[in-house]
Length: 222
Image 1 (cartoon, rainbow, N blue to C red):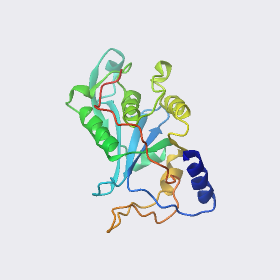
Image 2: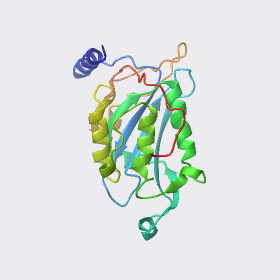
Image 3: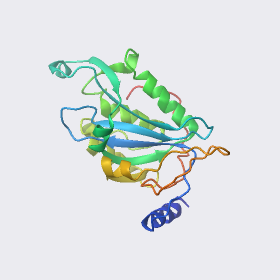
Image 4: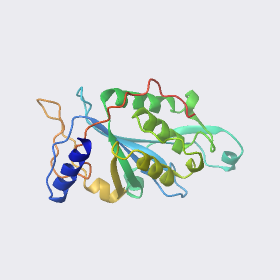
């Protein structure tokens, strides 16, 4: 059934039709090519929880609090990073997953656990970096193929490998940030049902959300 829905959604998009959007929060995984700005992997959260409430449109990444040679010698203080629109414009949206409310709650717990001053806020280049952060978010939404030891310092390659390992479970995006953001519909909660009303066509069609049970805790990377 899911492949059929995907084909219908993509066909409608090609014709320029707007599809009814689901009242749920979508997580989109992003990569940014290596450079002097961080993080190089992050995710966005966008939509409205099924239970209702204010629209969600935020992003989170994890990076070192200070970029210095100390990164190469051991653990340093880490922090969450909220990317500015210009940074997202220059990044690449790789794939998305429509979350259940339970998964959304667990992702927020992950964000809190990696916040500055919390036990998981220590940044280690080898095993606790921005890629490990998005890996844990991907684990929460039920994705597989997450253990890619050779790619944990290669954000784009890592996310492409995870996307390839979860065909049929993720919504492939593969768009540059500026193009992706330009096609998004405004998030407008319905006054009667709480559903999100799409006012224009969007690069993210309305697919069934993840049915994989949410993670029980925002555990540290394995």
